[in-house]
Length: 183
Ligand code: FES
Image (cartoon, rainbow, N blue to C red; front, side, top):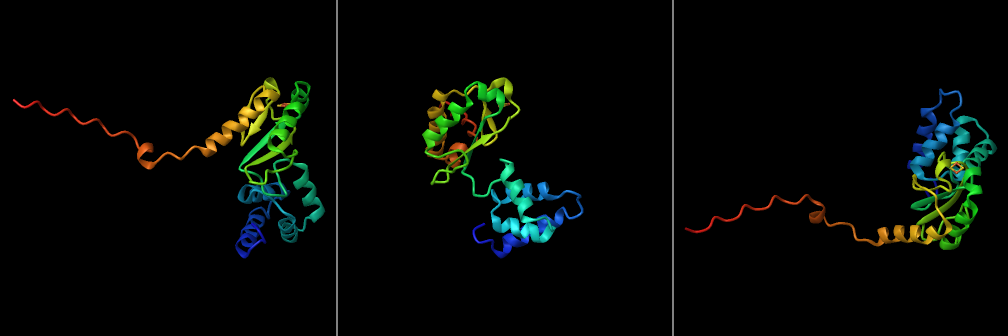
């Protein structure tokens, strides 16, 4: 969405129009923009403000309050470490620090190659398996500091693995019937 081109502007205006009859449209508008573009920079917030009459200050407040929204593009893998109470008392801060050390970024940051974003989250709703970590929506249970390098490595290995060729991905053909023995 660099530079908010005409197509992006049109799309954002149409998202705003979609909810113009709603009493409180802001969360729906921002969710759709986040899903469509992966982030909501200031330029977009100004456009939403123009269209809805909601102040930029209010929009900025919402975007920065909820971890689902982002001001900058997120990485391909979004790692969310829960720092809610149940996770915190079971060592979640050390797990977050281990991800931070492993990736060389702080919470809220994205690696320069655009591969990983690290977020600190509030309760994921999985307190029974604390400390919980979510990676692109998949929840990892009882994550310990020592698990962190292997979690990152398995993602990197998956990325490096060649995509299956079409022929390999296709279902195996039925085995040929054995030739009849000559009389
Ligand atoms: S506090 Fe971490 S999942 Fe609830």
